Amino acid sequence: MVIISGAAMGQGESHARLLSEAGASVVLGDIDTARGGQVAEEIRAAGGRAHFVKLDVSQAADWKNIVAEAVATYGKVTGLVNNAGITSAGSVLDCEEDVWHRVIGVNQTGVYYGMKTVAPAIIDAGGGAIVNTSSTLGYYASPAAYAYQATKGAVRTMTKSAALSLGVQGIRVNAVFPGLVDTPFIDHHRSNSALDNSISRTPLGRIAQPGEISQAVLFLLSDDASYVNGAEIVVDGGMTAGSLGSL
Ligand code: NAD
Image (cartoon, rainbow, N blue to C red; front, side):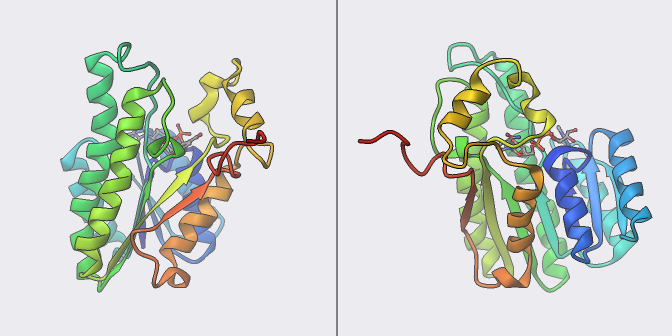
C-alpha cells in the first residue's frame, strides 16, 4: 500500500490512478476533502482499492492519523509519495515572511513530517520506497519563486540524506524533478508569457502531462528500481539539459 500526499488533483491524482492500475492499494491524503474523496471513489468504482484521509502535510498530527488509518485499512505500508506542494511568486526582496513560512511549512516541513512519520511503518512492513517531489527549480534558479526554490532545493538534499539513513533500513528514497506539468498548479501562468517562454526552451516543444511524471514515480516505487536509491529523475522534456541556442 502506498500513501500519496496531495492526491486530490494534478500529479497526485494521476499517481494514485496509475499506482492503482498497477495493482497497489492507495491511500490518498489532501486538504481538499471533497475532491480527494471523489477521486478515491472513482478509483474504487474502477475496481481499485483506494481510501481518502484528510491530510494537511504541514501538520504532524495529520500524518500520524493518515498512517494509523492506512494501516487499519490495508495493513502494511510499503510506499510513500511526498507530492503535495504549493507555489510562490516573488524574488528574495518581494517574498513576504508569511509567504516564506507557509511555503516552507507545506513543501519542506511537509516532506520532513511525511518521511519521519511514514518511514517507521515501512520499516515495520519489511521495507519499501519513498518518492519525493522536487522540481527543476530545485537545482537551477530563476529570479522569481524564491521561497518555492528554497523548498525544492531542500527536498533534493533531504532525499539524498534520507537515502543514506533509510537505505540501510531497507527503504529506497528517490526524487522526481518535473518541469512544467499541465495541472491547476500552473493556471496562474496560462494567461502570461511564462508558459510560452518555457516551451520555447524545451526541446520536446510542450509541457508534460501528469501521467508522464506518474510513470517515473511508478518506476521508482517498483521492484524494477530495486537498486535505485538517492537518485534524481528529471522529467522536463530536456528543458534543463542545456541551451537550445548554438554556443
Ligand atoms: P496541483 O496544484 O495541481 O495539486 C496540488 C495538490 O496538493 C492539490 O490537490 C492540493 O489540494 C494539495 N495540497 C496543497 N496544500 C496541501 C497541504 N498543505 N496538505 C495536503 N495537500 C495539499 O499541483 P501539481 O502540479 O499536481 O503539483 C504536485 C507537486 O509537483 C508539487 O510538489 C509541485 O511543487 C510539484 N511540481 C509541479 C510542477 C508543475 O508545473 N505543475 C512542476 C514541478 C514540480
